[in-house]
Amino acid sequence: MLVIQIRNGRTIASSKIPKKGIISFIKSAGITAYRNSLKLSKEKGIKSIAFPLISAGIYGFPEKDAFFVAKRTIDEFLKDNEMEVYLSTFVKDILSLIMG
Image (cartoon, rainbow, N blue to C red; front, top):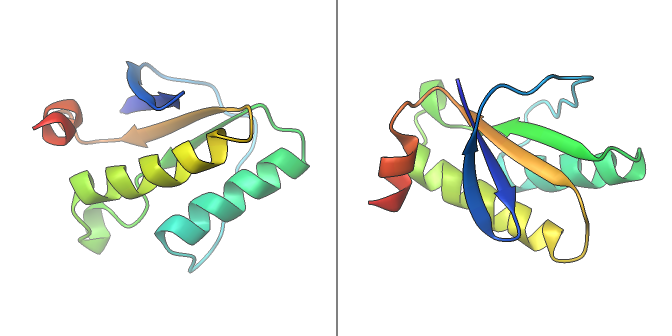
C-alpha cells in the first residue's frame, strides 16, 4: 500500500504509518466524508489522519478523479488548520497517474 501525504498543497509519497483509531462515515460520499472526518478529527484533537481514496476501486470512481477530489478538500481544510493528512491507495502507479 502506498501512502500519500498532503502537506501545504504538495503531494509526498510515503511508507506505512501506524494507526491509533478509525473514523468511519457510512454512506457518506467523497467531499462530505473527508470534510466530516477532518472536522471531527480537529474537534478530538487528532494531529494526523489517513484516508483511502473514497469511492475509488470497487465503486468504480476513477482513482485519478478520486485523488483530486480528496486533495482539493484536504487543501481547503489545511488553509485554516494544522494537521498531517495522508491518502492511502493500492494503485502502485498512482503518482504517474496523477502527474500525467
